[in-house]
Image 1 (cartoon, rainbow, N blue to C red):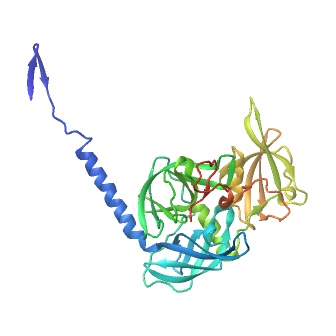
Image 2: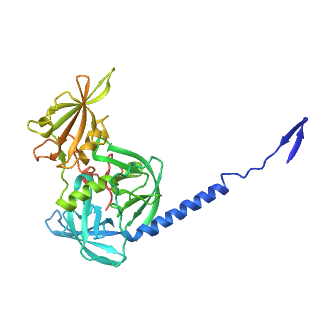
Image 3: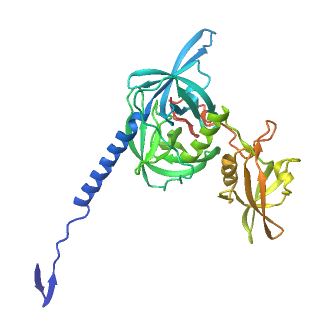
Length: 361
């Protein structure tokens, strides 16, 4: 349409409002994608149940039942669940489409609240998740789908958003970097798989931060690290090289993570690492904080050789250290001091809480 205003020709272009038709189309595409993700993966998700025998204050025997969400992680019927559900139980099983299947506990890793089980008998048809060793953490703000079994419901999808990736919460250190999602964790949802909109497995829901309406997800790479140890050794084997570290800052050099002590006859001592050495890189991890060292050691497997770059007397040096299993008497300097399933002893119904607790079972 052309109009003349004060002798000036004005061309009016009618452009469709992008906020409505385009928004409806995008919303519809997301909705279809969520439906597809649920359809493709819901046959790998189910309720995990565990029977516990406890004693009341009078010493009388009590039977308790814990439940959470689980998912198949292999074609052979291996299952991921929360350690807080099945640990120290007398018996565990899964409820798959209304049918109970016995499940044997393979191992637990309390500091990440992860457990590995194996179904004694497999359903006729099921899907399973495949963690990727090189999968990167999702971008903050990206949307993800959680498939869980809240209360007694069948597997149900929920759409949420990645809110952060963190190594601690309320002065509590995690064993490695966790993904925080904007999803309140309801009863029975602990152990649920988290999937991005590309259909990739992102991790397992392992902890809840009720004060901020969030849940914490153990990332796929960390899940794979724990799963492999539980599968082949029955326990999580913590890597160790025998170093103590500290933090210092200078105007010229900025923040540095440096070695404060080398344990005699340790792997670090054998390759001549020294007190005062500044850590620059450990394996795949650039070192800017103590959390970076904790991450590097979490993924360092006993028996592997770890490439470490240090800065000593103004000169960069590379050393290769053979990682060993952490001795029982070694101080837990670089690892989370409190398991995820024990970080909050506050009554779940109480509003006075300041630390994440295990995803509600």
